[in-house]
Amino acid sequence: MSAVANPATVGECLRVGAGFSQGDRNWIAEQFATLDARLAGFHADATELEVSVKEREARGQKVTLECWIAGRQKIVTTSTEEDLHAALNNVRDDLRRKLNDAKTRQEPRNNKHLRDIPQPQGEIDPIDEDPARADTETV
Image (cartoon, rainbow, N blue to C red):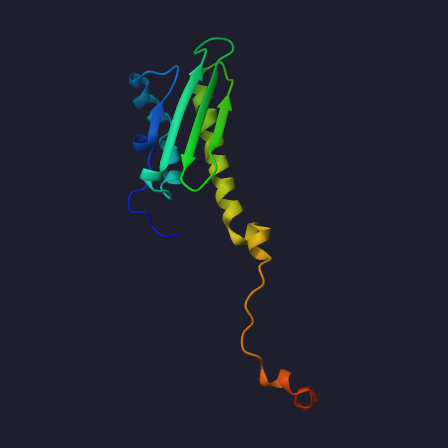
């Protein structure tokens, strides 16, 4: 993997959505700081994260973390944990898992379609051209 000139970080890419205030942003960015290593392989300009919560600190609370990376499908993770801290940790860990899975799917050894592409044939061996000669070589 080539190095990215402007690697993505949670601090640069995180937006807070419904249910959170800008005052919560720094606290959430600290919670998500472990994602920085995983996001570093992507350009900051092409990466966005948005966290939101519905019915904050209520029984039906739902935390959602969305991730957009240019050239990839949007990744959405959710948690219905009642504790906000635990819910944020759940969506963070789930996003890390989904990013790792997406990377694994793009690697040829784990991607059947890339593995099954026939490899170009090299030059034909002179032994293969003359069957009589091939027999003498194997005797």
